Image (cartoon, rainbow, N blue to C red; front, side, top):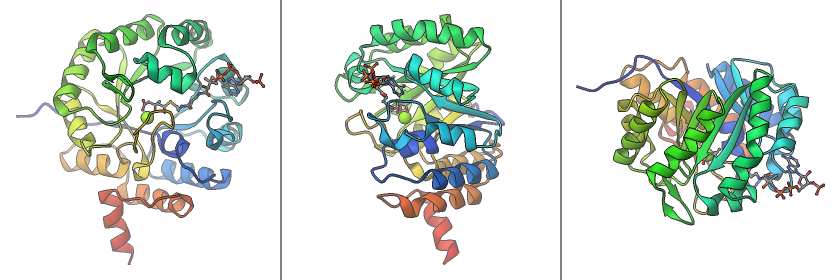
Amino acid sequence: MFSLPNNATIIEVGPRDGLQNEKNAIATDVKLNFIKALQDAGISEMELTSFVSPKWVPQMADAEMIVKSTTKVGRQFVLAPNATGVERAMEASAEAIAVFVGVSNSFNKKNINKNTAEAMARLAPVVAKLKDEGKFVRACISTAFYCPYEGKMEIEDTVALCKIFASWGVDELSVADTIGMANPVESYTLFKRLKKEFPELLLTAHFHDTRKMALANIFAALQAGIDRFDTSTGGLGGCPFAKGATGNVATEDVVHMLESIGIHTGVDIDKICQAAAIVEPFLSKSIDSGQYRLFTQKQK
Ligand code: HMG
Ligand code: MG
């Protein structure tokens, strides 16, 4: 009836996307304990932090310490917006780099102070150097469905941006619903098209959960052949420069949905909730994912 994979990969983005929008300054030690607990829960791919301007995102100012103090488990990404960010990441011995550009000019101006063409022109030599050095490069495509400033994006514009990254030889495209506005038909349509265009690339879906549609969008993406999902423990997250952005879809809820329909993830839900419990006391808001609520009720 449904076309579903046997296995799916969870790319945990909590320590990066999850915390970047958090108002409280979280101590580096708490972040490191959170990361360790996520590794212990079976997470094999994770975004650890981002080498962005600390003036723009103070929460990520400890990126060097985070990378240097984390034991390597599986594939660990760091985000970098430009050559300076990549240099910092290389000095910290990061091995997998995530670069990011949105489809929307207005979003890019707010997020990275460049329009799309300017951002891509500056990134081209940076990505070429990373590929020459044999690094794994993930390209994050923001506002692939909707922009908070320009509204609905044209599917052809999203595909065109992905094609440029593909021509640079990136290893992965992580395609994002930055403000959580997509619906399952849009998810299926875009990911089906991307699977056809880029059969050789790792394709990942990155959903924020503003309208509580992310699980439905993931189910639609599964139907389109996607088996990699960016998720954030506790449903934390959001881009500080995307008006109206809310948290990412919660890792524990995605793992529960996938496992309950027979898709193996290798991730332990209770241990993910234990990781969430490490960071929750330091957050400005409480965690309210379905699985975390069940977990805390069980503890009482
Ligand atoms: P800018 O102010 O235009 O930078 O910011 P600049 O190139 O003009 O340089 C100004 C100063 O910043 C210089 O220092 C640079 O050295 C320094 P000064 O000479 O004044 O002392 N600088 C840096 N310092 C540290 N690290 C760097 C860096 N670059 C320059 N990498 C910039 C441009 C891109 C840096 C800034 O806009 C920025 O950091 N933006 C990042 C915003 C961000 O982190 N957004 C969230 C991540 S994206 C996201 O969440 C979306 C995603 O989840 C997918 C989705 O959901 O859509 C991935
Ligand atoms: Mg995001």
